[in-house]
Length: 433
Image (cartoon, rainbow, N blue to C red; front, side, top):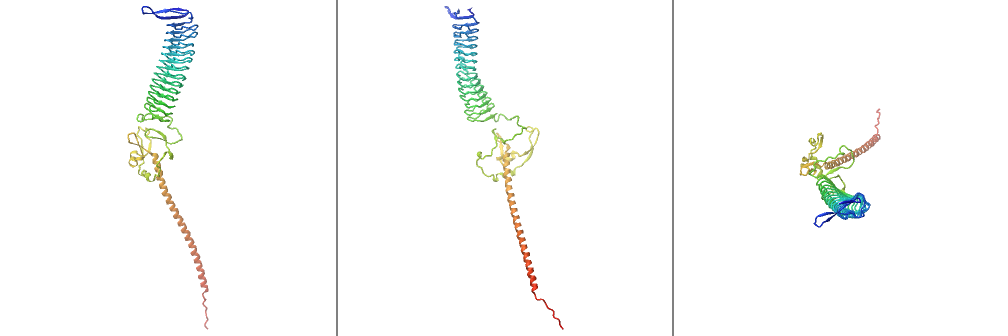
């Protein structure tokens, strides 16, 4: 091995005995400039380029005036005509021509890149079909089929390996986003996260197999197996390990697993005054607002005597146990077990089938029905009393009229009597002599 014109060129040959030896070669096109070439045809066409290192047959073969490149491995940076590239592995950055500032480590890494710059590919076939800028792939066949997709980052075995034109995706972990082809702006962290997604966009999956079967858009899953059952639905949020969701559902938020988490603390609610509608929760943990629209009801009929059960209920005062209410605030209400004996339809049961609470909103409606029934009775009685009062008033008027008539008749009789009296002959007195 020797140095000539600033380029170290060493060719490996076989001698007659079968032992490897070194052939010291340097053609007339080699120029000064801290260049190193090891193996046949390495830096074969270099002219004025500087600070290049070529280790392996045909490495940096066509490079002439470019500088600061490092190629290690058969055919690495073979067609290179740019600066500041690093390729380690057979055919790494093989087709690169004008792209600069690329790093490829692994056989066929960035194999077909021609003009893309600022790419990083580590692993066999990583970004092997890419020809654009700012791609990052670390892992066996990571982003292997990506051709026009821009700004993707893949770290892990076959992460985003099927992606062709999807942009702005990030996959970290074994098989993350492995089937994605055209979906964009997806983020997957964890073994197998978003593996099945092909064209869905704006999904975020954190955790082992999170959103593994999802193909929709704008889903969020955080936790091992989170969103595991989601398929084509979109706009779902599943948070927590094993919060798997339901196949086909959309626009649904699920936090925690029923039976696993037993308490919920949310800041910014207690003590904050707001207006709005009543929030209710089912025994399955589903939240919603109370509705009274006929659109959501069936078998509507008058309550009638159904509300009479509340008349047998026993309202009590009480205090919750210290574990529930350390302040021991006085409470007013009913005992669910007592209500169950009278009106079980007013009781809400827990997952073990035990009486848990009372449907106070239903009690209020039943109270209203009983109040209205009594109100109607009172109204009817009032109407009766008013009718009687009117009848009495009419009788009084009749009596008054009769009294007037009697008085008139009496006056008439008195007049007649007086006239009769006046008409009687008067007695005459005869004097006797």
